[in-house]
Length: 357
Ligand code: ADP
Ligand code: MG
Image 1 (cartoon, rainbow, N blue to C red):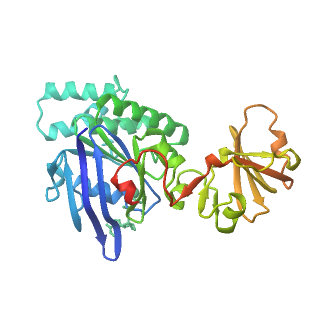
Image 2: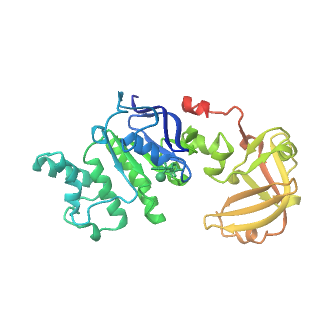
Image 3: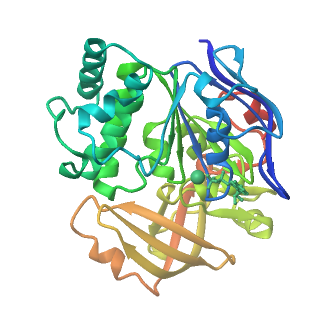
């Protein structure tokens, strides 16, 4: 597969702030690529550099094999969709979607045809004459998307485009966006601080921290084999076992992650014996959090660490879990499910970046 975007040694400094700090990255044609990270980690700056709204302090940007580093934004084959999707309130949906084509002096009939197709793609056929205030938040968001798609860019940059929507709508749009991306085959570079959003849609995810990539991997690799404590904590709930705690509970030196759903909780007397493949730890339930589909229990272990355990509320007898607060329990997990941090990682490596991370 050929490369849509290539960043080499890319940096952007604002005075003392290294917003982007020596980034090397390749994004493949047709990929749904996400940049995930906390606020201020440099995600938006990377998008603005790719789009040409900012000039890099150092490094190069290649789009479809051509170095565009010195080019202005209008001479780059990319479009951007922002969180505050900035559609024109006084224009109809059709006028909004046709706007970019009108600027480029595309003939009227062609404009109409392409706008209709773009509106079909985002499931808004027939909404041509509506005004933005007659649309829901999700529909307005899709108009913004159609307005970008109608230009048929090679690359679409999306900066937290679902951030203003409520949770349910956001989840629906995540699925739709993924389907639309598959339909049109355009490379999507999607910025978010929401780990669930990134896991739902992406082919690969780059986790950002302080202007650098902490890990670059598929959603499954990222969750099952986090490369660092930062990634383990940012993507999912991490339970870290390190130092003496690791030696006592795992019987090994190092730092290990055990995910909450891979731990089971039993009464102390019902716990199996710790053995080759099984780890057992005793403790007291400090807090029980009922979340509908799952229940989380926070357990203070005698070994001196706190672990979170989650379980599916598959049957109606969840009261038992809720009543365990302040009770002694045993936690049991399989050694295979421990992920060593900083050591060799199982599974194929996603790219050279991940090796260096
Ligand atoms: P993110 O999108 O991940 O939240 P940004 O790329 O917006 O992060 O910002 C990264 C860092 O760069 C932050 O510390 C931010 O304050 C700083 N920054 C971004 N844009 C500017 C600017 N125009 N001037 C000065 N500092 C900036
Ligand atoms: Mg941002």
